[in-house]
Picture (cartoon, rainbow, N blue to C red):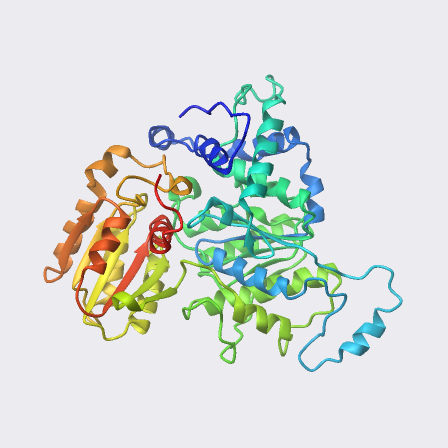
Length: 511
C-alpha cells in the first residue's frame, strides 16, 4: 500500500489513513518469514536514525524518566498498575514512607533541599490498542486527544519528509520512506512525551526486547520482566532461553532490573544477562499476599503483575527522590493505585441487562494466557440459561489455544453455542482505527481460519452448536437474538476484543 499524498487540511482520519499505509502487508510478512531473515539486527540503528531525523537523540529521552517493561504475558497489565500508582504521586513534594509514617517529619527532612522530587505528567506507551490507536499513547491515564494526535503525527511525518539519511550508511532508508507502523508510533510517542513535558514515562516493549524499537532507551530508571512463555518464535527463538535472552536485551548497565519468578531455564538466562549487562542489581519480586487489596484488574494471575508493578514503581520513585518504603506495609498511594487500575479488555465484565447478557472479555493469545483466562471465566461465570464462546485468533496457533481452552473449561461447564468470527468490525468493513493489512485478505474472505477452528472444536465437543460469522457485528447481533439469560466468553485475539468493544458501544459507526 503506497503512502498517501497529504491534503492541506489534515484531519484525524487523514492521520489514521497515513498511519495505516505504514502497515506491512501480508505478502511482505510471509516473504520475510519464508526467507528466514527478519532483519531484526537493523532495527536499533534504524530507529536511532529515524530519531535523529525528527530532531532528537536517544540520550534526550532520559529526561522522561522511563520505566521499561517486557515479558510474554502480563506486561500490559503491569504497566497499567504502575501508571495507576504513579498517578497518585502527581504534584506531591513528598510522600509517606508507609501507612504509619509521619508525613510532617518527612516534610521537615526535605525542608532544606533545593530540589524536591516531583511528577507532573505520567506517560504510557503500550500496544496493541483496542478501539482507538490513541490508546497507545496516554498521558495521566487518558488516551491522547484526537487533535493532539493529529498535530504531533504530522509534525513527525513532515520532519521525516524534509530530512534524508546518508545513502552510504543507510541505503535501505530511501527518500520518502517512513518507518513501519509500530516504529512510527514509537517515534511519535517520544515526540509527544517530550513536547508535552512528561516527567515519568512507562514503555511497554512491543515484541522481545533486544531489537524492539523501544530499546533505543539508554538510561531507564528501572527495567522489568513479566512472565515468560513461548510466543513470536519466528522473531525470538523456540526455547525459553532464547526468549529470555531477547527479552533481557532491555537491561542496561547501572540500571536495576526486576523480574517475576520464572521457569528455571528462563531465570538462569535472565540472571546471566543481568551480570553480562552489569545492571545495578537484579531482583526477583517477593510474593506479597495482597489479599487485603481488591485489585482493579480481575483474575488471580494479576497478583503477580501487581507485585512486579509495586517493585518497579518503588524503585522509580526512589530514583526520583521520593521517600518510599514497600518492604512492610504499602503506602496508601500504592494501595489506591492498585485498587483503581483499569485495563480494558483484560478480565473485563460488561453487563447488558436489557438483553440479559453478561459479556466476559479477556484477550489471550498464548497457551499460558488462555489457560489463565479460561480459569477466570469458569470462576466468574454464573448459572445462565445459555453459555456462549466468541473466539478468534487470526495470526497465531488458534487450534492449540482452543484445545487449551476446552481442557480448562470442560467438564466444569459447557458452551451451548461456539462462534468463530474474523476480526472485521462491521458487516461492511473495519473501523478506521482497526484496519489490518498484515493478515491474508483471501483467508479472511474465505474464513479459512474460522472453518478450521470450527472443525477442531467439533472434534472436541459435538454437542455445542458451531457458528461461523464474517464479522463481529453479526456475531453480536446473533448472540443478542438468543433467548433467556446468556453468559458470553469473548477471548483469543485482542483485535477481536477491541472490535467487540467498538461494536458494543457503537461509538465508531461505519462510514
